[in-house]
Length: 254
Image (cartoon, rainbow, N blue to C red; front, side, top):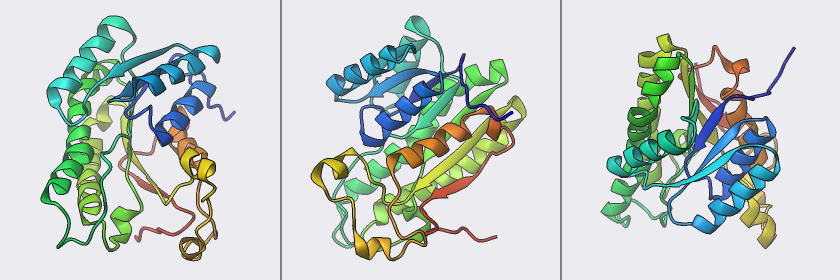
C-alpha cells in the first residue's frame, strides 16, 4: 500500500520563510512530519509558519542561521540538538537572490554569493546534520536545483555555474553516504508559480509557456510534492538523481 505518512520524521528546510520553502513545510506537515523552520532575516514569516504548522497538529521549531557561514550552520545544529529533535530529512532550499545580467556586466560578487549559497550551503549542512543520519542509518537530503543548470541560458551565468557545482556535490555525496541508508537527490524546478505571482496576477507568460511541452508553468505545490516524495520511504532506492519538475522543458539525456 502506498503511504506518504511521515509520522516520526523531522524535516529541516532552509529558507522556510520564503515562497517555496513555506509550501514545502506545509506539505511535510500535511504528511505528519514535524518541521524545523529555518530563516535568515524574516523572523515574522517564520513565526507565522510555526503557528500554522502547530495548528495542524504537528510540532514545529524556528531557528535562525546564515547558511553561507559554517559557524552559523553549526550553531543552528547545536540549538536544534539542545531544544528540539535532530532532523532525519534536510532540504537545502535557500539561495541568495541577485539581479541577472550578461556575464560581462555581472558583478563578480554575485558569482561568490551563488557558489556560497548553493554549493557551500550543501557542504555545511551535510557536515552538520549527516553524522546523525549515519548513526541512525536513515536519512534524506533533497537539494533544490533549477532547470537553468541544464538549459544554460543567457544572463544567468552565476546561477547556472553554482547550480552545476551543486550537481557535482550531490552525486559525490550520494555515493559516500549510500551505505548508511541515506539518499541524496535534487529537484530542479522550472519557472514556478508561487504566492507572489498569484497576488500580482502575473501567473501566465505565454512566451515561456510555449517552450514547455505541457504548455504551462508549474506550481510551488508541484515542486513540493516531488520534494516530499523523495523524502519518503517510497523513494528509498532513488539517490544521486537530478529530477526536473519543468513540464518537460528539461529532458536529461542518457
